[in-house]
Amino acid sequence: MKRNGRILFASLKGGVGKSTAALEVSAALASEGFRVLLVDLDFRSRSLDLMLGASDRVDFTIADCAAGRCGADGVNIRAADDGKGGELILCPACSEEDFESGSSYECLPGVLMRLEEETEPDYVVCDTGADSRVPRIIADGYAELAIVVSEQSRTSLRASEVTAARFETGKTVKEVRLLINKFDVEAARRGGRVSIIEMIDECSVKCIGVIPADRGVAARQDKGIVQSKGELATLAALNVARRIRGIQTPLFTGMKKIRKKVTL
Image (cartoon, rainbow, N blue to C red; front, side):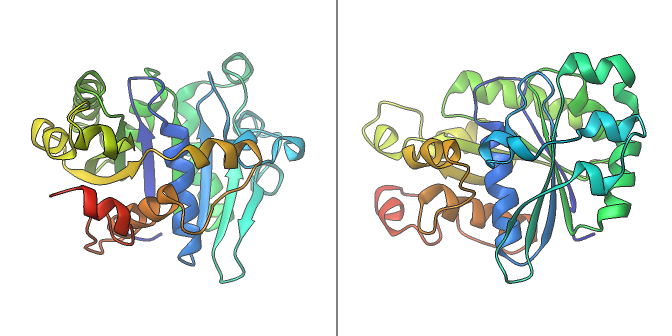
């Protein structure tokens, strides 16, 4: 596994675009030539199979893996292969009721370790639901890096700090970082929304990146398209992926239009 190879995406607040951010960063890591296993652990609102256009290929879910009905070969779906050595693999979620009927959440770290052993990825990215038991269990028994997702509001930022506080005592988590998602640069520039500087200054959690609001993302994901070259969200996720790898990268590298409007 690479540096920070086991990654948890979480937020106590719903609607912040957590699953989208987890997918974008996973795809960015894959585009850099890495093998990435993206695990959907959002049992209440599973969506990654739809975003990847892979819902018709889901034969088994992580519940089947947890119950021993299949191994990694049965549960993993190849979502993207850029031909450069990178690969994005999805492990889909089931409903909350289906998982609870056959397994306990406490088994998840062990299931993830088994999937990791069988799949041999460079990175495992875990997407979790809002205000559920799962993020803390993953932080206590599996993840090394916890990325807390916030949208552009002070209420969301406060929820991020509460979320982060839960992970700071995790047994396996070594780092907790803030990811600002769906950031409206124009609104912040006009003074209508909180600015990046204000969010970074007001939050006790160190920022790992900013993904600008981009209308093209939802339309692309409705069609099951993983990435779009030159799209702001794709470029921003690539910057986050590089910071995960320990590469110092300015927030808006590659985004000339954004850099002109933002002063850091």
